Image 1: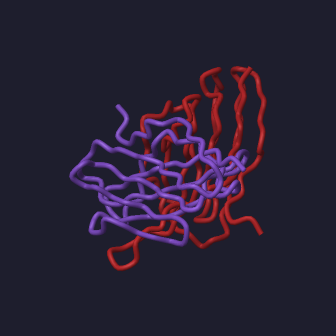
Image 2 (image 1 turned 90 degrees about the vertical axis):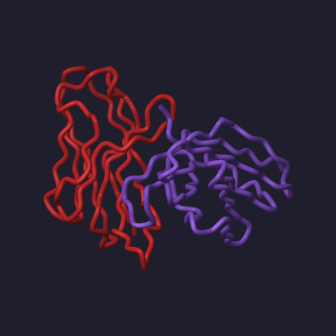
Length: 117
Length: 113
């Protein structure tokens, strides 16, 4: 029973197309994220949603638009895809920690490898 | 500007020996650190964490050491096993209840039988 599942696992598409990646978590976490792992293998945060509200929006082109219909889902829509968007995109979720109950980090999905040709 | 650095892209260790993975950070405000392990075609999985109020945290074969003055942490795996072969990411946050973790680029560990 997958905790954080993202689909599709692989996505090959042409430049200029619009595509979506879906993410769902069944852990009851209240926060979800999108991370991008670039060609240098850095994991960089793109967006974070807490209870369906956007709380982190790093410097990401506005061609990328996250959508959170409910706490368990955070989808990523990308318009007008460019070659430089090729990367592995990871969805993650976490429970918001507190001083009494530290945040033990994220649970990641297995990634979506996006290739733009 | 990398706030979290893992200067060794790869490390090879003989089975049964100790693996030491290093991580350095530049932001002295970081207060909470985690290590993640990642196998190919899978997402990273949480391994061990440490808060800045401690200098050591141990969980089975895994121990993380934190040197705040040097802004350095390390992950020790003893004894190393072939199944430990993976990419290890160090991550840092401004607080233990923070939710914006900054990741290092990872170190690929190969444990040779």
